[in-house]
Amino acid sequence: MTEEKLFKEEKYPEKGTPLLERLLEGKRLPCPHSQTFYEHGERIPPEVEKLLDKPFTPPPPVEIEKPPEYPKIQLIRQTPVFNRYEHFEIDLTQAHENAPIGISQKIGRPVSFMVIIQADDDFYYRLNSPTAPSLKGQLGIREELMEINEIYITNQPSSNPNAKAVIRVMWYE
Image 1 (cartoon, helix red, strand yellow):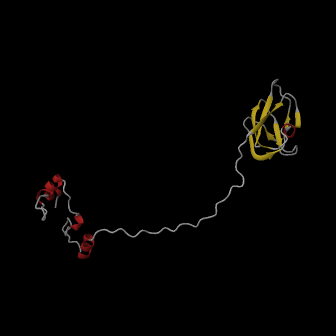
Image 2 (tube, rainbow, N blue to C red):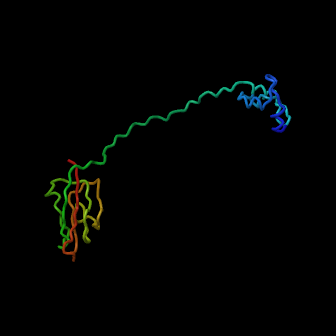
Image 3 (spheres, rainbow, N blue to C red):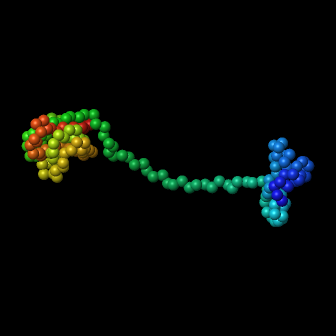
């Protein structure tokens, strides 16, 4: 049955009004599954027809098993908030060979963080020991979350007359 024919000729037995008029009036249309015949003329099997006439009931809720609760892990060490700092200036116009910058004399305790905030020429630094591996000092290099007792500087004399390096160290009290 074509749609045009369905709209013009089909009547509802309970109301006796054409389908198109019922649509224009805004009345509810019956569910297509409650019809006895499909559009192409096949009859719905009686067992399916019985199922379609029953109201829909949702399945019972499924209980989701919760995972076991694990004990909460307590952080032993958190990132410290530094409340003290000091600047150390190194004159790069003079040669240094594993020269300490004087953390223990100036501060009197280990620090937890260092950053190079100025480096006008090449130099190398070692942490905590003059025999530790040397690291190239460059602007922005940071060492953090470790105990730094001393920083040792090594450099060749700079040809720049005002060359210096500035190292900021920070710690928490």
